[in-house]
Image: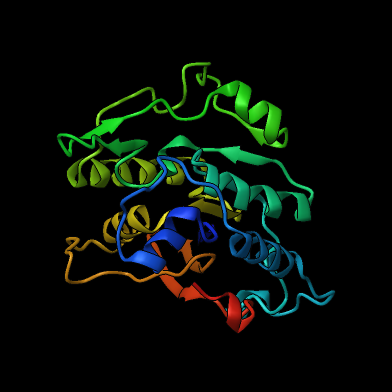
Length: 241
């Protein structure tokens, strides 16, 4: 199995932080910015490029011959779904919803009076079916919203979820030649990488990853190889965020 972990394109919250250095006024589930939509379009073109000759595919460590994805999964947060939808359309593939790929914390806003992080519902089945018909939704997603007003997810719980996702990934694709893409988030990415590499996550030691960046992990038997991390060479310089 080859796993391509892709951070969503620039969201309104990302742009807010870049402008102000603050999360004040953030959305609980932001959409992509205009720049983010351009990033997603360039990403989709890059992932869909192929070369006719595939000799030496085993050593194509930079995917110069193409990505040849077999599965595209996405978090159910809107910025990830929007990014994944552009990719799936370009490749003519379904977009598979995987709720556990969501960002650390979940769907929440800070209470203005207490500062407490308050869980909110998240988007429901009707929203996704109306706006993203290519998205294959989890069977248990109903009309109350996928997050369901659960409490804010702690770092410890995020790490536990990363372990759970890792085991589920291996169950689905571990003994295959599948080429799997995830559209996910920077915080969860760090928890997942810590699990895969067997290290403890620390705030002073962080895997930096830009909007739209790609990380490739190859799984073969019990071996895991980090082929590249935070790849952005496909983006125009003015679109790097």
